[in-house]
Image (cartoon, rainbow, N blue to C red):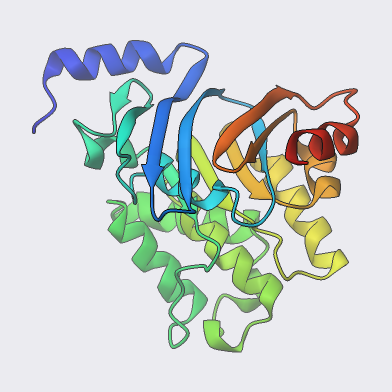
Length: 248
């Protein structure tokens, strides 16, 4: 369904409002034991929302619905005023997504891969070169940009995955356990990078590490058994007490 001038005008107005992403009563059943139930929240530019929960709680399923990879059984997602159901292609243009397994091609060089990622996102010519240069610097990939992705360490592979999610300057960035498998030094580098991104974008990242959420989030949301059981500011909270109380 094409986007009309009126809809684009409304979306532009919505883009100036505090919320850049709104999830409303999302439901999705994947199996008898795996589901997401009635999840609602909104995200504003500058928010860093830590999506916490035990393994299997529904974090990845929620992120996949937010980015349009998975269609909810009911409920809705809108990005900058655009409905993911009615206008999925346009809404997705405003989202950057890093799944738990980065979508990398091991036989491509980093620079080739980032160029491809930019082209897929519609970047061309001068804009493509500018964004590739900028994201290579931002993600500290200069020393490995001519190397094959398959030869990189886990930390650099995660950075390449993050770079592809950011190359088109999305309003919303969704990260599924971006620090999973990283050593402490690599985790610290990832945290600094996420904090830098948050200056101009809205971020959700899922994790089961409370220390990671405490280090960089201004909000936390806890999912347990497919339900959102907490959504609150991170400042001054006893996160361990809240998490264990919500998931026990």
